[in-house]
Length: 167
Image 1 (spheres, rainbow, N blue to C red):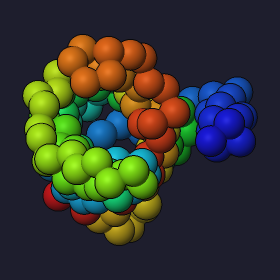
Image 2 (cartoon, rainbow, N blue to C red):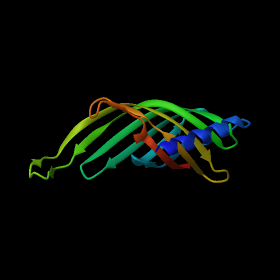
Image 3 (cartoon, rainbow, N blue to C red):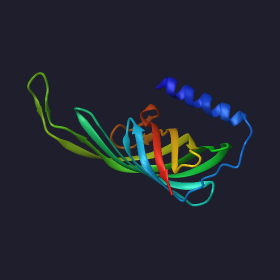
Image 4 (cartoon, one colour):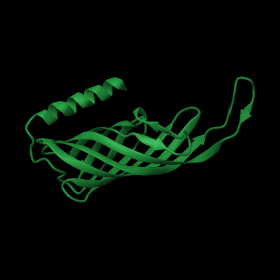
């Protein structure tokens, strides 16, 4: 994860140090998939060439628990170079954590239970709109502060790669 962050920051710094262009959000809608620790579906609605709102429906799970989150973000997109933009934003999420039923090594049985999840979310990343194709690729970090389940700030949990169809 640390290497991904370093590569992302170097990538953004290299592009930012080159000449700026007029790349802006060119399509009003973008729908696709987000991959990473919280895989899900993403939809972005462009309000102006520099402003957008994004919704992410994510599902994450392992052998002990699963997490469902609906995230809403307000984003600012800034041109970098040609078809590259970088973006940052903020928002929040609501969802649930479900701990699965299990029996531990001592034979103690634990029942399934769920808890409400609320958080404040941020996002920062870079996006590349493929010229001549209705596709956009982005790499982002989406830290969040969880109020209820773990009551903590998480940075590395939110690293993601998205591919979107733009129209």
